Image (cartoon, rainbow, N blue to C red):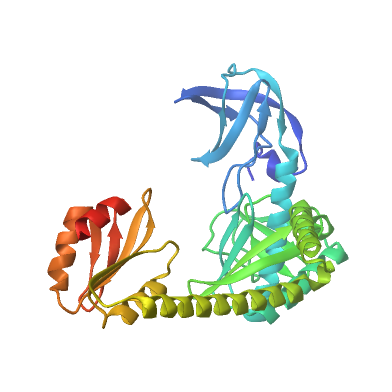
Length: 377
C-alpha cells in the first residue's frame, strides 16, 4: 500500500490537508496530483470520489501509472497546502454497496459455485453479473442470508499480503505483488481494491430489486442503505396512489388491477365485435358499384380488411382510407377487375405514398382527403 492513499489507510477520512505536487491544464480542466489523498480513483466497478481541494471542485479521479490524478475546475499552486474534503454521502454509499456486493457474491459463490464476472455501482442501481443462472427462489434465499449477515454486524477485515496468499479467495484475475484481501468471516474472502465499511451492520439492508438472464448467467440489480429506503418509499407511495385510484387497500392493488385488466379486455372484445357488426351493416347497405371509396377515422388494419373483404364482390375497386389531412392516410385497396400492382404504383407516385401488395394492397399516402378524392374521380 502506498503511503499517500489515505482512502485505504483510513477510508472514513472526510477532510484532510492536501499538498499539491503538480497542477497542469488539460483542455478546460486541470490535472492535479497530491502528496496524500483521500479521494478514491475510479476502478473495479466503483466510481471515483468527488469533492473540493481549496477553491477547486474535483469532478473525477483516476489512477495513471501509479499516480492519482484529480480532475479539477481551478488551478492550484504547486507545493501549496489546501483544506480538502470529499463528498462523504456519495463515498459512504459506494462503501455500503461495495461491502454489500462482497456479501452477496460470497454467498452465491458458496451456495452455487458461481463467480462474480461483472460489478458496477451505477447512479440508479448496482449490478452484479454471475456466470450461472439463478432462479427466483435462489434470489430470495440469497437476500435473506445477506440481511442476516448485516444483523450480525460482522467485521469487514482488510489485510495486505506481499505475495498471493496460499488460502482460497475469490479473484477475477491472477494477482502478483502486494495483494489486498477483504474478508467477512463465514461469508466471503476476496481480493479487492475498493473502499469498504468497518462492519456489515453499516450496510443497513440489502434488497435485490430484480434479476435477469445475462450472457448465459444472471445479472442482479441491488440496492442497500439509503438507496434501498428511497426505493421502498417511492414504491410505497406509488402503491398508495394506485390504491386510492382503485378505492382499495395498498395490499389489494394487484388483485384489483387484475380485475380491471380483465374488464378492459372484455370491453375491448365487445367493442371490436360491435365495430365489426357496424361494418357489416354499412357494407350490406352499399349498392354495387364500379368503385367504392371510403374515409373513416380510427380504423385498425383488421377493420380495414373487414371492409375490403365485405365489398370485394360488390366493387371492381374498393379503397379504404383512415387518417387525417395533417398526418396523411393509411390505405387498404383491393380490386378484382384491375391490375392492382400497377394501380398502386401509380397511386403512390401521384399521392406521395408508400406500400404495395397483390391480393390486397396496404400503405400510406401523404395527401389530403381532397387530393385523394380528386385522384379517384
